Image (cartoon, rainbow, N blue to C red):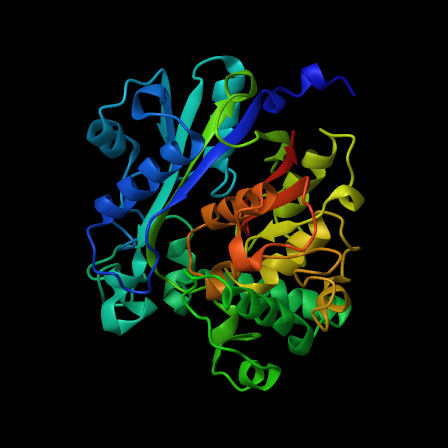
Length: 403
């Protein structure tokens, strides 16, 4: 394979940053956003004046409440950036689509150092009422006077406004076809919790047993409470740099070896051609066509767990096991432990460390590959890592190599 044809290899992660993370911090969301952005710039060894590009997901949104704390214009103005390229939008290949876009921007020469950020304040926005307060039709900040449009016209009359319900259909189909069980799926949550115990920013750090998991209240079959990610407040940011502009920076460049962003099926949560898989099937397949590396070369996976089954689906899609075999693969938790063959979600994932919408996974991957993850550091050197985010009809993935 001619590396010159794979333009994302001209891009790398040069710095990462994160604000305080908490269940309900009650802090100004823009303040959290700028904390993360400035931390990432400093971590890379750059200054604000060096930043000439900006990318974010999903851009400014007021519904659902807390889903977005700032848009591209907000941060460009607050930091007084002079940019050659910027973007912020919802319709992209998962939450990492904004990072993939940044890679393409620096690869094409539109920018040298792109600041990427994602910030939320869903915990504070929900308050004491829980997630229903910000769901369409829930009677709270996201639903009062809500007029359904698009696919929600078909879901809301059946009281199905939440992705918990939509993803549960995928999980149920997988259970039916392949004999997957809740006892197997539990290990995504249990593994995340034991890793979050070593993460000082983790939301839930108390020990959790298999009995604790199985006895938790059902949210939507087959998901219980611990299969669902934890709304929180916080912000995460990265600097995506041209490789030739990053060689003398503070951290060794984490080169983007390959990206996956394809969508071959219908862009639908409930009309996909095979509900035992999802759009990650297409994104992952594309990723492996853009590299000579294989799943056997990957030493770590940070994979989206908005709901626990999504992580299992990514494990299959990326080829770490065959379709239908993620249940046996994760069962018992040994393979996916920090000292296992495929360390998984070493910060705790969104199930225990907080719902940071994909960005938390790339942040963790970078820290692990730089050896900066503290107590939760994987006990072997990590030179190749995979990061995946999104579920249902919106998925994207990255393969990182430490040069």
